[in-house]
Length: 428
Image 1: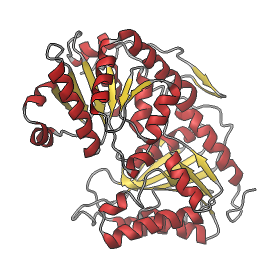
Image 2 (image 1 turned 180 degrees about the vertical axis):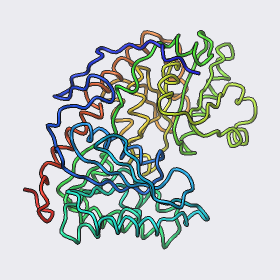
Image 3 (image 1 turned 90 degrees about the vertical axis):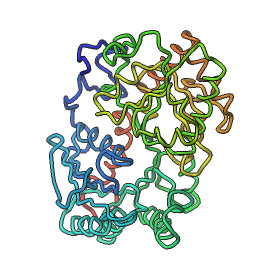
C-alpha cells in the first residue's frame, strides 16, 4: 500500500496558468468557455488504452470549464453491452461492446453501427472523431458531416505509411483512405506533431490546429524521491531508471541494448531498470539472455493514481524510440507524464519527443541508433545529481507553463467556440 502522506513539492499548490485557475483537483473552474455547448468524442480504442487516454484528458478538462462532453469508446474488457457512467456532471463516458475473436474481428463493425445511430438520433453542437482512420470513428464522423453538421477530426498517429501496413493489403488501404478522407471532409483538424502537419498540408487542408498531448500537473506533482522509495520498498541508494507505457519492440530493443552496455561497463554500479506496464520478460530473455533480467524489475500496469510514486522513485525516466513514421507522428502520452515528475528524461527521440526535449532543454537526447550515446546519457543522469536536478526542474517548468492540459484545452475551446450554435456546420 502506498502512503497518501508522501510529501510533494511544487512551486504552488494553486496554479494560475494563462487565465486557468483550478485550486485543487476536482474543483470546477468558472465556465467562461462553451457553457452548455455539447460535444461528442468518438474513439476506436478501448477505454484506458491508446488514444482513449488523450480523449479522456481533453474531455475531462473541457468539462471542467463548462462544456457538456460525451466520449464514446470501446469497453476496456470483453463486454457485449453498451454502458454509460458519469465522470462528473458535465462528462458522460459511453462504452460500446468489445470482443476479440480474431485480430481483425473485435466488434469494429458493430461499434460503427452503434456510433452511426448516435449521430443520426442525437444532436450535439460538434462531433470530434479521434483516429478517423478506423471505421468505427470514420463512418459516424462522415455521416455526421453529411447531415450538415460541424465535424472535427483528430490526427494523432500515422496509419497510412504506418500502422495500416500491418493490417493486410485490403484493410490497410481502407484505413489509409479513411485517415485522409475524414480529414479532408472535416471543418477543423487537430493534430499532435509536425510530421502529421506536413501530411495535412499536402492534402490542402487549411483549418488545422496543433493540440499536443498534455501534462496532468495536478495529478502528478514532484514527489520526494526518498519517501516514494520507502513506500515502494526500493533502497534509497539504488540507481533507478524507469520506462513505462505500451512500448514498441524496436525502441525497447534499442534501450535494452544500451542498458546492457551500461551494465557491462559499470559492474560496480548495479543500476535497476523498472518497467511500468507490460511484462516483457520472456521476449527480453530470448533476445538479451537471462543475465540482464537480474537488473530489471517488472512492476506491471498500475492505476494512474499510483504512477506518480513510481515516477517519483526514479533517478531518470527513459523514453525509447525508433526511426519509423509511427514514432515520428506521435506525441506519447507518457511524455506529458514524465514532464510533470521533475526528473531528467533520457531518450533516443525522434519527432515531437526530440523537439520537446531539445526546445525545453529538459532531457538528454542521443541519436536514434546511437547505442553508446543512449548509454552515456543514462550514466550521466544517474551520476550527475546537479545536472539531473537542473533537467528535472526544466521539465516541470515546461509542464506547468506550456503543457498543462488546462492550457491546451483553452486553445481547443477557442476553436470550438466558433461553432457555438447548431448552424449546419458553419461558424457563427
